Image 1: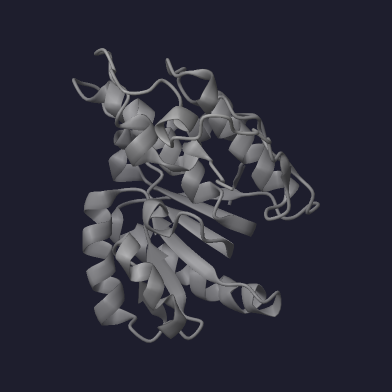
Image 2: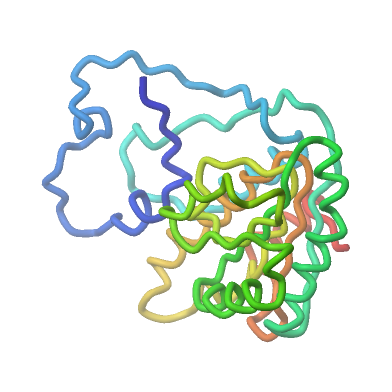
Length: 245
């Protein structure tokens, strides 16, 4: 049995998309050497609330169209968990305030998450800022925060002792958290210029992955000095799927 959600893999799904001819096998099943698979679409979601599911669907619908074969056109899941708080967003002036607000929010929501038997995670969407944030988290908040800097750190989670997880979405793929603070959902992560096409493929996947880590509560933070909230999310705020805090 193989479970597959290609939208969660920005490295393998989006960054390998190319206009050049691809001589590899055309479908994921052939590449996995599964000649006669029985494909089952799992569309009932028992992890996150209806409000988070609606936001995820909005991100998927807003993502640019990609020229990919039918293996990647997976149906959108429907939440069976029920209703919860609507995701919020806020805009802070700069990186320092984004980090401080992320820590404040995570700390204030930790008790609520623990009462449900869950954890809190701060997930950063900007790799360059994360490389600065995690140093501050390790030295200033070592007792409150457990930093995951790569996929290799996942096996260390048993030592976290209920601390707040500080990481990036890609490093915690597959892990659920009761509450997620998604930091630096910034407009400049899809910049104009020669690499815009790559960013337009990578960023929606990272955004989808970060949002879908949250089970119950989702707080999103953007930075004013990075052009504010990503247009992908601004459009969803206009649809009332995301509220200004």
